[in-house]
Image (tube, rainbow, N blue to C red):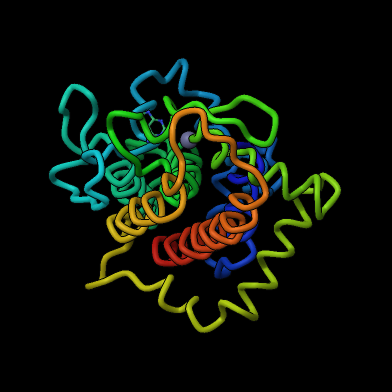
Length: 265
Ligand code: ADE
Ligand code: ZN
């Protein structure tokens, strides 16, 4: 996602934190955040360039056209180094944050502020369908399309263009209205699904493999579907995919909160 997608995931998450998790997040955030997690959720994209090692941690490439995901097969970087993908990163930063509860601030091996900012960002990315995409097109990054009259690539349609078009059309350029619309759906239309989103099997703290499997399915069913090189995407694509964007942003936010609530008890 771009700025507004990550902001939305983190706004929804912060509104659902337990007292213990809210306190921990507040303590870990840099003072410049003024207690607002959402204001920092794009941080991991900004540091990609000087934390060069972190750039493969934002996505997963799966085999072309299979439309499924397996950790062992797919969670590696381009050099084949295992665990270097967004699911591996979510496991890693979840484990680092679990050391917060052990208390001894001064001897922590990790910078837990950075762990929190990475984890919060990666919960957003793993819910962007094309961040769990096909290998040969780099998650839609090499598929040129037109978004209405503008030239872009399919990956960017899902990161930003759909959300921007929503804001222009319905909300007059305000991300907070998008957050409100999603919060309403969470308490009404999707209320009966929300518990199942929060579930994480067998006493695990984080469940990124579930989110990645859903992600590649959504990529096949919605993002790639009907699109080829030089397609023009307009109202029929926008109107059918916007609900999927809302739904994935909602899941990302609900699950980030549930995970932070399990970490900080
Ligand atoms: N680079 C390679 N694959 C990618 C993906 N699925 N998403 C974002 N960047 C990528
Ligand atoms: Zn990212």
